[in-house]
Image (cartoon, rainbow, N blue to C red):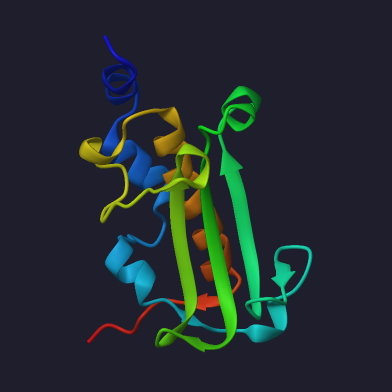
Length: 144
């Protein structure tokens, strides 16, 4: 059995969604999140990037060995001071030490998970998004 088969056998998508996807998000919905309570956008939850004028949350996902050899995944969440490409909130995920984008449209789909770092990247992204929505920093798009 390869790593992907082991992961898919061990983790059930529905259970992962129930445990981590509190707001039934997919990437389409994530892209539509709006900035809410700006008074909560500060350290220590965020770090400031004055080069791009944004408050950021980021993290590496993987073992010390993954990081040492440049094969970790990562995630980045940014809230810009002004609109950037038509919106203030942006996020993305990377793989292989930042050399590749890690793109997916729905959380925990087997076709998008090649290894444990892929799974943990989606979990970490959702945990952070849940916190930002819980705190009112990000707002869900209004249903139309």
